[in-house]
Image 1 (cartoon, rainbow, N blue to C red):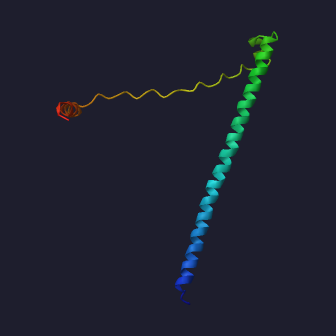
Image 2 (cartoon, rainbow, N blue to C red):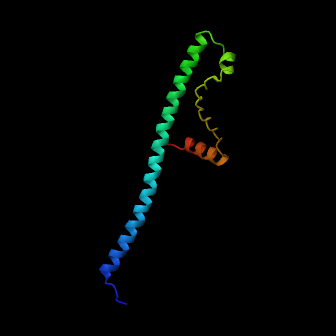
Image 3 (cartoon, rainbow, N blue to C red):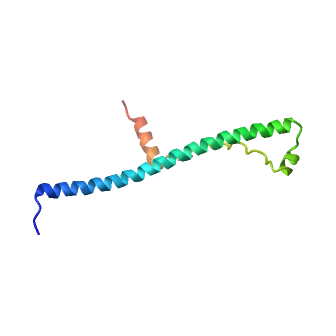
Length: 110
């Protein structure tokens, strides 16, 4: 078995590393493509829901009742989901040590 030169070993190792990186890069590329497709479909769904809500409202204004539309297989459009705001985090009262430090700092001359 012939021994490889340092240059050949290095080249072989770099090629193997690049192949691994290509495989990993391909994985994130596929994830990015899937995310883009998801975002496109989510946008199309929002638009379709908005169009349906407009048409459903037009049917109600045109004299149809909600019950009649339901009997015809037309459900009421979903209302836009309300965005929940995160509740503010409660402020924890200072510990006795922190209160003492603040009191000491306040009484020291400047």
